[in-house]
Image 1 (cartoon, helix red, strand yellow):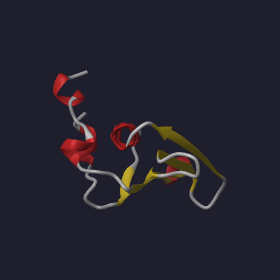
Image 2: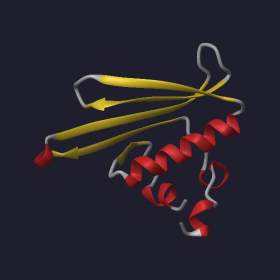
Image 3: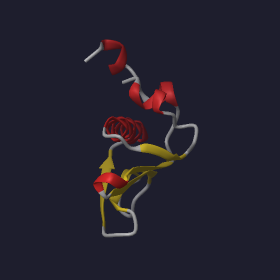
Length: 104
C-alpha cells in the first residue's frame, strides 16, 4: 500500500456525522445500501452505527462502541474507504467525495 494513502485521517478530510452509500448493478440484480453514523449510542458516549442491506429488503446493523470521538471518526473513515473500494457511491453527504475516501 502506498505510504501517502495511509496518512489520511478524519483531521485531513473532515468529520463524519452520517453518510449513505448505494451500489446498484441491475445486470447482477444488485441494489445495496450502506448507512454509517457516528455519535452516541444507548450505552456508549462514542460509537459507530452501521446498517446495510438490499434497498427495499432485509437489513442488518451493527453498533461499534469507541473509546473516544477520534477513534470513532478514524473507524468511520476506514469504513468509508472500504465502501468506496467495493464500488459503492456516495449518496449523502455530497461533499464526501470519492477523492477523500480513496486517498488512504
